[in-house]
Length: 330
Ligand SMILES: Cc1cc2nc3c(=O)[nH]c(=O)nc-3n(C[C@H](O)[C@H](O)[C@H](O)COP(=O)(O)O)c2cc1C
View (cartoon, rainbow, N blue to C red):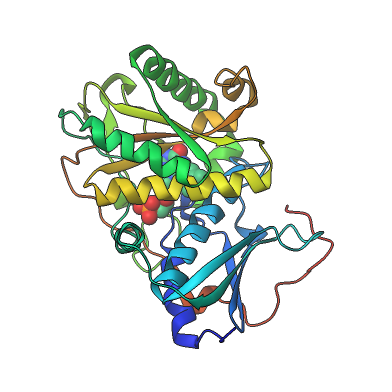
């Protein structure tokens, strides 16, 4: 197939790097060869305290993979995705091949256009209901990527938020967790990764909406958040392996892009996913679905700025990432 030009690759990778990632670690590297762009995990950007298994790392990579596929489609080529294509090299998480000419449909075009606009909000949302039709569209977005998004009713919402609070409580004296947060939060306006101070919101009164506290050592304002937060659980369908996390990351990103396009603000809580016993409390007894993240949707009451990214040039590997095989993450 016709090779991708350097310019096309840069545009596609620019879309990929706008994906959300745990603590804005951007744990990816890209490799371009002819008509293919490979996505590799960068194990040096993994979070041993918060993410020992690599679940959040793979969710982040999956989100980048979806953006990359949309980028290839926007370049007028049909994206063919191969997940974990190299047996024995688990760092090589995906290859996207740019096949023949392709006309992107309006739906995907709208999602592609939402990529540079999407952002995570940790601020209060308006006390205004979200259109039920919009919620159905978000559920469909997850299904389209083989995931499942389930909105919580009131008792479920209280359970989910209480698990987030319990997870936060357990981290209070966790030295390794706090050290990791310090490494990945920043007040340096030139830094291109990590969560900047401006991206943190106020605390929510009585911990009603327990957004992750990135700077526990700093005093924060406490404010009233929306009284009935719109909360959903995103799950992988099938298994709970790195391949399933990559697929769930694509579902997560399609949901976030769809929400952005519908004018909704989005936030994530993954604290309970970091404790096996808390995550078990959300387990599907039939074992069909596997919870990956808790999401919050709403109407933004105030703006949130975009966070920085390393440039596409900086994350395109000049040679094949080493060691190629055998590799183990971590
Ligand atoms: C797998 C995953 C888990 C995340 N968990 C949280 C979380 O628990 N709390 C939070 O505030 N943000 C969470 N985020 C959002 C990231 O912090 C955010 O994507 C990153 O800082 C980049 O900012 P942006 O989404 O505004 O581009 C998570 C993102 C991903 C992909």
